[in-house]
Length: 263
Image (cartoon, rainbow, N blue to C red):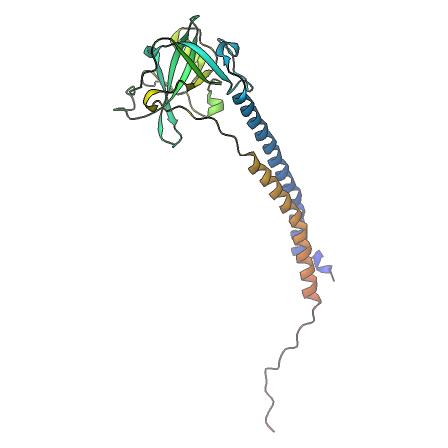
C-alpha cells in the first residue's frame, strides 16, 4: 500500500521534511538564546535605574570606560556649566522621531575636572545646517545635576560615522576622549544624561527613560518554531495516509457514452 513512498516525488518530500525539522529546532533554540540575552539586559537596566544615586566620581574618572553594569546608574554632579564651550550633537531624534540636536554642555566640577552633560534634545530650526542653533541656557552658577551615566559613543556600537569637517561646535558622537582633547581638560569617562533639574520652558527636551527590550517576543518565536517542527512530521503522516487511502479506493465505473438503440 505504501510503495508510493519510494517514488521520486515522495523521496524528495521526505528529504525536505527531514531537513526542515532540525532547522526549525535550531531556529527555536536561537530565539530562546535571544530571549535570555534580552531578559538579562533588561534586568541590568532595571537594576541600574533602581540603584541608589552616587556622586559621579565614584563610578568614573578621566580615561575610564563605563561598563555594562555602570551604564544607566543614577549619578549626581556639582559644578557650573561652561556654555562657552558647549557643542551640539547632530542628527539626533526625539520621542516623535523628529530630527534635531542633542545639547552637550561641559560641567566643571569643584576640583576642576569636567563631566559631559547631555542636557536634552532641541529641534534643528536654525537658519542653516552649518549655523550653530539657538540653545536655551542652563542654570547659572553652581548647580547640582542628576542623571544617568552612559558610556562613550563609538561608531562600532552606534553605527554613526564620526564625520570630519563639521561646522563649528558640532559633533557626531559623544566621546569623552575626543572632548578632552578639544577642551584640553581632564574629562571623566562617559557622559551623563540629565534628568534634573528640569529645564525652564521644557527645552531642551529631556531624554526619556530607556525602555525594556521586547524579550517575550523572542520567547513566543521560539515556541512557534518548535510547533512548526512538530507539525512537519504530522503533516507528512497525514499526506501519506491520504495518498494511501486514495490509491486503495477502486476506480468508479465509467458510464457508457453510447445510448442503447430503441427496440
